[in-house]
Image 1 (tube, helix red, strand yellow):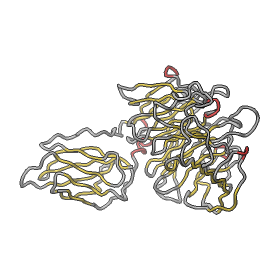
Image 2 (cartoon, helix red, strand yellow):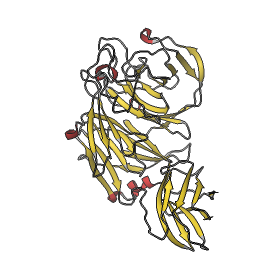
Image 3 (tube, helix red, strand yellow):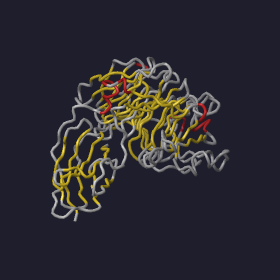
Image 4 (cartoon, one colour):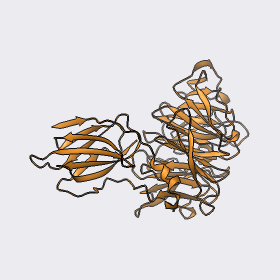
Length: 452
């Protein structure tokens, strides 16, 4: 028998990320990987969407070498391992790689911060699509041949000086086009297969109303709020952060394909909703979002800034984190993990740092309070619902399930009468929660839950 429950919501007054500001003395800095792991001029990082704890790091590389990656399994744990990968023809397909982003299907995209991926003075550059299959990436086409030109899955060549990229869905990515000074939506549709060359199904929508400016060789990272469909854009050349509603805009006219590349669509989009969102950061570079907090790194000052964006129209600065010169020289990419820990790359110091705070408890699936009943939560992390499973229930006892947010506020309390109970979490804020099962008023099992 399966019971399905809902509960009343209590608004969260504080995000776990605020602890980095209000309890800054509790901030701890850990070097995860560095030059000994072949981290060089690291410019971005992202988490594999399905392989738990797998962190990918992008090195920009040089004009002659192309970009490279360091893949860290069980990142930050005692069982951590790191491996270096370089595509057989990263000289072209990852020429001055500026940024990376994983899509939910396990493919990942990169933008190339170079004018010409062919290195002959043209403008033949744009984003690439890659597989995260470790039997493909950096293995097939290495060295490249006429039949297998590297391991890339696709590449479109309409955006030189690509300085930022964000995933939307499947093989669809948003790109900061530093050459044309606008934002583009790239849909690779079906990839052409590792090392092949058919680009004919590619679809590009160019949002010419959204004007941006690059700085040479410094990324302008972007992040998409999957729920609200706002794309947040670090417009580093104009010292501001923009946001645009990706659900708005319509095709105004067709555009020619640059460099004679055969593609299915190249459209000019107009009527898009966008705005200047923040102007109080000098060189916005890294960016990530967690619930109602936006985190931005400043390349100029080395500070990490946390903004409260719960008021959709009026973002406010919660405060800044100063890692200090021991950890920061040229901070680039920033990522927030499911436990609220902040990870960042520094291209000059050639390392990846994780920031923890003593008041933010790492999230796991371990049982916190032992009792007569053993509890499982699945899926965890989750977004819309979670199933609470007890191995047994004592006869004639009254059971309740209590859900509390990270600051201890109760957001749900409901009776349960079955060994499997599904909690409806639709509308709950992203963040860390505690799920506690009580028997006759006494806690018998407690676990942490991530809602994202």
